[in-house]
Length: 272
Ligand code: G3P
Ligand code: CA
Image (cartoon, rainbow, N blue to C red; front, side, top):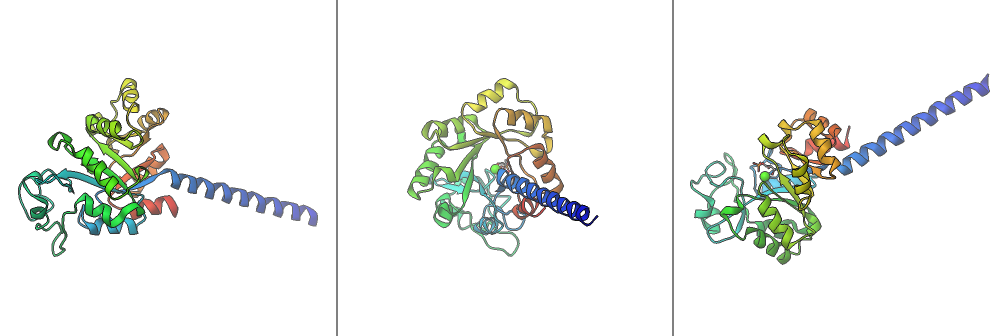
């Protein structure tokens, strides 16, 4: 009888151990597979595209700082989302009408917070290879040469190619980067209306220059994620701020996501 008890207890302990081991392994593998992309920095906490939002993102263990790039009148790359400065600063007008000096006189903070529009050069100088960058070429047709300038700055600050992903809605811009730097990881952004519309031929075409797609999270479906994954394309939906949606997308097999709250995604991946 005692032998039977000993056997049952040992077997139960052993099975529990195996379960915990498998669960922990699965959780850590999953966490490694899903990239935390801090959308405009930790922009849920700090004014978007400011050094404050990037610092918060690094502190919250984001894998990538997401940057939207435009060009100033004097041809410098600056991190700002819109064509115009109106929404995010106390100024008005188009980014390209301002020199960097003029742009940096504007306040990119919110309320009483003071912040400056950062140049890409300042961002690289501040963070170097201590983080990774997920860089969007915004409106590349407006700023001819922006891809070359990005690569020039990477070289100047010795930013390694494997620390950078370039994303764009423009296939031409991505193909330009691909021509200059075939090893650069590229993500083709997909507009909301086209999210579930890509044909097999389009997937194959994207695969010729890009490593993945960035679809809108709200129009995405599980079969579409699976289809993209079957082409071995990464799937990085934007922009996911709700933990429940994060869990669903992870279950569907996405390989990263853009979020204004990197800490939330970190907790979903590492603490559940
Ligand atoms: O870059 C991914 C996502 O940021 C695209 O949308 O408008 O926030 O740049 P947007
Ligand atoms: Ca973006």
